[in-house]
View (cartoon, rainbow, N blue to C red):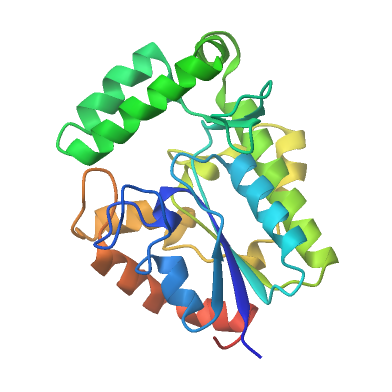
Amino acid sequence: MTKKIIAGGCSFTLGNELSDDVDGKTPSNKSWARLLANDSEYVCTAFGGLGNSAIARRVFDSVSRNTDASGVIVMWSFLSRYDWAMPRHKELEDTRWASISPWDTNAGNEEAFRTMQGSQTQTAQWARRQHTMQETGVKPFAESIYKHAANQYHETYLSWKSIIWLQNILEKKKIPFMFTLADNSLFYDEFKQHKDQDSFMTALHTEIDLTKWFSFGERMMGFNQWALLNDYARGTTHPLDEAHQDAVKLMLPTFKKLIGDR
C-alpha cells in the first residue's frame, strides 16, 4: 500500500524560489519535504508566510481529512507570525483565516520591499498580499497587534502551545511524525533559551518531545540558518535546490527512524 505523508510549514516547505516554483502557489517537487516523502502520496499544507499556529491548524485539518496518513513532517517557522480567525471575507483562507506577520505593518512594509527588491515576482506577490490585507480589514488589525500587544514571550507561548497541541494529537492518533525548524529563534534569543525565562516556560518546554525532532546543528539550528552558514545558493529570501537536496541527506536517518522507510 502506498504511504501518505502530510507536510506542514511555511515557504521553506512549500518550496518558494525553487527551480519549479510557480509564484508560490503550488507545492514544489524539489522541497525538502517532497524529497523526503519520495514515492509516498504527498499532501502539502504549507504556504508562504504561515506562523506556527497556522501550521498546526492546517496540519490538523489535513490529518482529520486524511485518516489514512502514514506520517507527518513539519518545519516550524518564526515566532512573530500570528494566525487569526477574522470576520468572514471571500479573500481570506476558507473565508476566515488570516496569517499576519510584522511585514504586514507600515513599518514592516519598508523592510519587506527592501528585502525583496531583487525579485520582481516576490515584490508583486507582496503587493497583492497587501491589497488583500487592506480589503479584508486585516491590515489595521495587524498594525494594532504589533503596536500594542506583540511580544516575544507571548509569541513563544503561542508557538509552543501549537507544537504541543499537534504533537499530542498525532500521538493520540498513533501517527508517526518528525518535527524540524527553519530557525532556532523558536527556542533561543541569541544564546539565551526561552525556557529559562520563568517556571511556566520551563514547564511548557518540558512538554515538547524533542526526541521526535531533527535539528541542523547545535542549539537547535534551523534549516535556513544551516543553509546560510554553509553558503548555499539563495534566491531573494530562500535557499535554492541544492540546500534542500543536501538537507534531505542529513534528515533521512531521523526520518527513517521516526516514520519508517519511504
